[in-house]
Image (cartoon, rainbow, N blue to C red; front, top):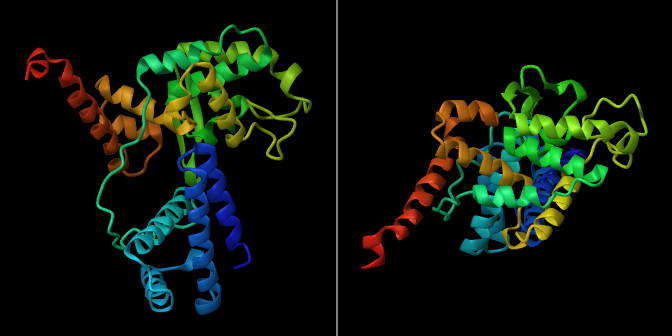
Length: 305
């Protein structure tokens, strides 16, 4: 049970590196989850990994009795646990999300933010000129992510032997230890090859390092997801796209949405992204449909109404 609090740290690191939530939201998540863990340890004397849906319902009743929760607070706490347990499932710590079936007052679907193709090209263009090793590394990271749709942790933790340059594929060990092979474009492969000319001399004090993107300052041995996210923020500012709050996750969303717009089969997209449930991928169809609706404003009759 003592290790339960470490899962909050991992969860928070993921949220911050992916920029999936604001600092205030992350703090709110942490406060809710810490409150829940204390209840679990004191009242149930078990680990958060052993929790059931009924345990969560009893906790909410306990809070309502002792604190008199407002409707918004009730919904937020359910949302906090739902996102937290979704993370634990995705990373293979547990099999099922006990908070999934807990009803909340929120009944809307949030569509993922995506970049247009023009915005992606503008972002990549801001890396040029390639006049230093860090620029070559950044180009390789961005091109790989947009070309293959990897999760940020999958990207930064690539091994040197993960990429097959002859077959233009990447071998990935994803969430929960699931393995998959994804294709990668020639432009991204070219960027990686150029970066590798500088890798050993500028980024790798440990010549035996197995990582594609090693880091001398990271305990993990490779550049962290959080550091890549920071570099992406700096690049967005240079590209004049700072207001879009571009994160690695948005690049992955953009990869999926652009492929879907181009006509890729939903099942193939599911395999490329490494999702076990196709319903997770179907949200991108809503993004595409939404963009089609926006396009109607350019119709001549629409402009004359």
